[in-house]
Image (cartoon, rainbow, N blue to C red; front, side, top):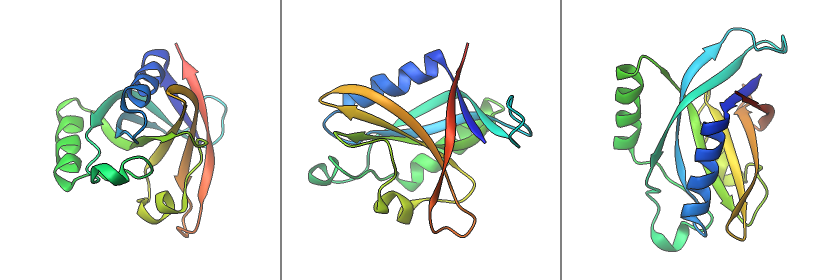
Length: 149
C-alpha cells in the first residue's frame, strides 16, 4: 500500500513540522482509502486534507513524544464526516531523528490507520515516510509515500 499526498499536503506537513520544531507536532490525515493503488499493490490511502492538532503532551516531553487528546479524535471524526472523507491516519514529526517509528510510536499505534512521520533536522523538514501497524501489532510495515499532482 502507498500513502498518496498531493504536493500541497506534503508541503503542509513539512511546514507544520518546521513550525513546531524542536517539539513533535501531530495531526490527522483525511481522504479516501483506495481499493487498489496506482501501482497495483493492493490499495492505498489518498490524503486530501490534514487536520493539525495541538500536541497534548506536557511541554518537557514534547521534544520526543506526542499525544492526541480524545476530544481531538472526536473532532477529527466529525470533520471527516462533514467533509465526506475518511479519517485515514495520523502524522507526526521526529525532531532531529529519522522518519521511522520509535518503540513509543509502536506502543501507541492503532490498527487500520496510516502513520506518516516527517523528520525535521535542525528546523528543516527532511524525509516523510509512511507506515502501517502489522496485523499482529508487533511492528510497523513500511508503506511508500507518493506525491500526486
